[in-house]
Image 1 (cartoon, protein in one colour):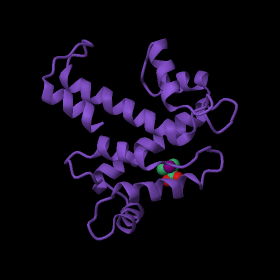
Image 2: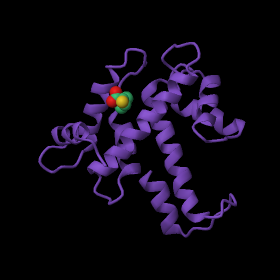
Image 3: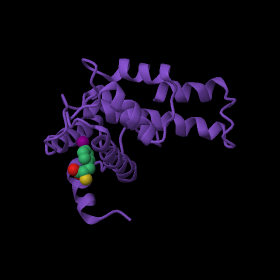
Image 4: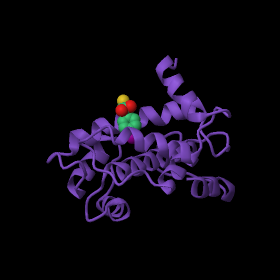
Length: 172
Ligand SMILES: O=C(O)[C@@H](S)Cc1ccc(I)cc1
């Protein structure tokens, strides 16, 4: 069930085709994030928004329908809670130490090397601001979810053919 205020926000945003484009997603995310004065951000980039649309877009339309958008919106809402919980010094951005704790709290137990790689990839001046945090966690969650389709019993190993591999690596 999608509440009416969300429906009207979506309708306003999506326009006639009732789907949200990368640009429309960027507009709403940057509008909303500036409302939260405690969050540091240099704005959601087109690249970040394109990645999130690709990850959330089930039907390959390169746009988000209301259900896909609602799922993304709720993910961001939940990640915002974790971000605030682990931004221990209330700097509005994650240090590498805070990031490791937040990633684990989000349900991802990564080894040191992977944690270092996330910081290298998403940090600017050793800090991960809110938009980069969201992009990183949305991608991490999507990659885990995709792998689990091939590893139903959670063995940690999976087999996939080249086409399935390309869906994972090229659509992310
Ligand atoms: O809408 C809000 O401000 C809260 S509830 C969720 C949210 C927060 C930040 C972003 I960017 C997007 C969505």
